[in-house]
Image (cartoon, rainbow, N blue to C red; front, top):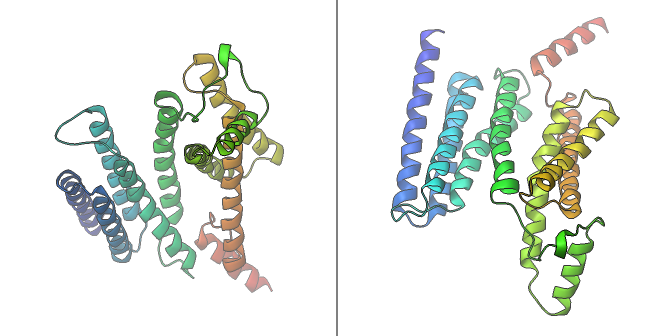
Amino acid sequence: MNKRAVNISSLVILLALLSLILEICLYYFIPQHFITVIVAAIISLGLTHFFLETSLDYDYCFLHAALMTIASLAFCMVVYLIQPNAWISYDYSLLALIVVNWLIPFAYCFMRDFSDRGPRFSDYLFFFHGMSVLFLAVYCIAIVKQLFITPFLPPFDSPAFGAHNFVPFMATGNYLERTISAGGDISSMIIYIIEMVVLAIPFGFYAKVYCRSFPFLGRLFIYLIVPFLLEGIQYLTGIGRADIDDYSLAMIGTVIGVVIYQLVYYISYETHKRDFLEDRTVAKSLLFHFGGNI
């Protein structure tokens, strides 16, 4: 590692530490926690741009994003575990901080790579896969928490005497019909449905990303079996809620994730004639090779 690389790495670590201290102070001293999230987003965007333009390398963007995501996750877990606490309270803005510290660098670097017409910046694939592994680690923690520790539950009671519903959306439909007929509020049910669908979207996207070399039936099996296993574990352990509606909502989220992958792939191919997960240096070399043969 040369002196310049050491200097940039040291700068990344220093600025990440200062950013973390600032976020913690803002969260502690300012009751309006959305301000902390907005400031964190602006800082993350500015530093990601600075590191990319300074180094012409996505590695330092990944280093900064990884440090900030892991640190904000640790801060969130500490605050959550010490509740109730008179000095600092836990709310969902801490989760928003984790999302911002990961999503802003990921989205910015993705757009820069997508709009880059030549291999000006290096190591994007390392950045993409590193950020994906980082996300999947946090995503697995979120899955465990939301399905087994503090599980999502619909606003209606489970069937009596341990009965189970085997018809998709029958219980959900009956609840919506009764509530609407009685003039009740269905917002809690809508929020529950959205939460269950959104929770499965990353699975659909990354299952497609990392299983795209599999045959169609192999990918289809993975799409079907993983949500089924999660519901099965809930059923066998008695933790959470095993229900056909949850499985059906997870499948809808999975399909949305796959569709998002296909849209990104289509746009990338139509714009640059390459897969968005393909090394642009290799693609450019192949283009020149075939062009020379022609």
